[in-house]
Image (cartoon, rainbow, N blue to C red; front, side):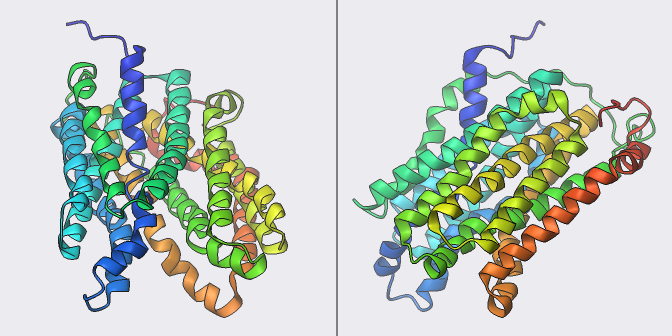
Length: 403
């Protein structure tokens, strides 16, 4: 049976819009937290529980991504995406009607599982549908849509939270609008059914590559989340600015991340995976060194440009790298692992940075992070050939020379 062309507009739009669902899982309801705290003021330690509403999805994305990776390779890509989109709307929108804070927390946990399923299945479908330059271009576009979607959903969430703290929960019902196109437009790709117990010799899992990629995304997310988590306190201290200016600064980093992601396909035509990884760390390092040096708000906005661009180049680069080198039958598991370490980095960022913030201050923490990232970028660039040789030893002989 002939499969439809993945270049159809409705297929591309469905995959891109589904990818935007992953970025609004947490921060969309952030503007609702103060009013929510007032609503449930009678609960002991309400400050802690309300903040947990924001971070609960990230924890369950970490838990759910390996499970999603297993399911996407066993039951298929499309069934997991469909089930996850249904659960996403149900669990995310539940906060609009639930009257118990702990019931809302349970809904947020289920939302995290749904996000894991959507992110793994959508990215795996993209990797299955597209090859070569088309894959690199589309994964860059996917990362860009996630960035632009984050800016849009955050803005809408803040606006409607002014009307009622429950209204931002309705944004999650957007996933149900995608159900018809998921059902009728997307198709389950043909892929070889490989017995994982007997296929290791012919299609080995590139362990060293995955260690490099997973370690990179973990470090990248720990570093990048110093911006949304710590920048509001930092800007208040050094520039005496409020929430509106801080939101603009974070949006600036997100915007330039999305713009860089849109150009990833062009960049990939000129540079290897390891070179782009070094370039991404270098740009982030430059930005963080700048954050440690400047105290003017407008200079901070300027400095956030390279930091955002570094992130925007690295995310599609790691996705494409894994998709290209991991055997088809294990691709979902590998991308599930990538999602796990991405959100683990987000979850760990405030935990890792807090001791440094307390002992040396946020200015020095940004500067130290920047120096470490710059050193790592320089080492990766200088030892590209050695890193590629080490990675090739587990991929096999049929490895592109531009690795």
